[in-house]
View 1 (cartoon, helix red, strand yellow):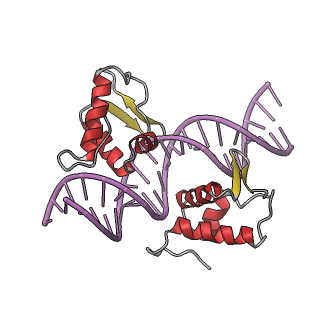
View 2 (cartoon, protein in one colour):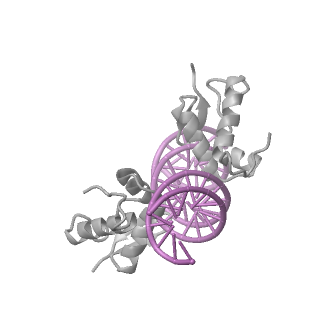
View 3 (cartoon, rainbow over the protein chains, first blue to last red):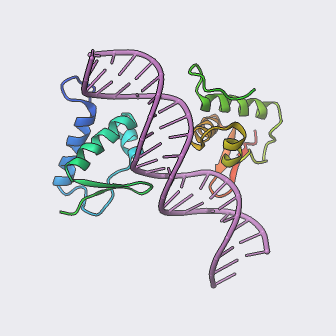
Length: 77
Length: 77
DNA sequence: TGGGATTTGTTCGTATGTATC
DNA sequence: TGATACATACGAACAAATCCC
């Protein structure tokens, strides 16, 4: 499901929802990296700003852990 | 002409324009290296980010070729 | 064999400006 | 007014390739 510029749900929330589903479905595995900011901006055609906001949401939910210079990783649970 | 932080033309575009002129004027010769990222950041007082964006522009224009660990070189034509 | 220096490649961190809704 | 979104710009850390001694 592509991300839309629709006024109902912000782009960054759509991405956060998408990634959350992939984590819960096990498509993104604990300990392994989530696609990088660059990857996600390219894949979805959105700005880095929106990607980072989405990651911030997941980080606050405890679903990912982020390390400067390395990437974001699916949290162990 | 020094590079300015002016909002009309981004820093990285200014540098791309500058280097393009030097290539077209033959001041930077085919097969020889373009100044390194470190050189360009120092000379112009701009960030590596901006330098790399400028190089990306010239690379897409086919004016330079870049090799990791070696540098960027003026393309043969 | 090894290590150090240089250079580009990749990643996240932060801030600012602009535009839109 | 505030939230959203994009672009620009600077920093910082880490990774990989190349070169030389």
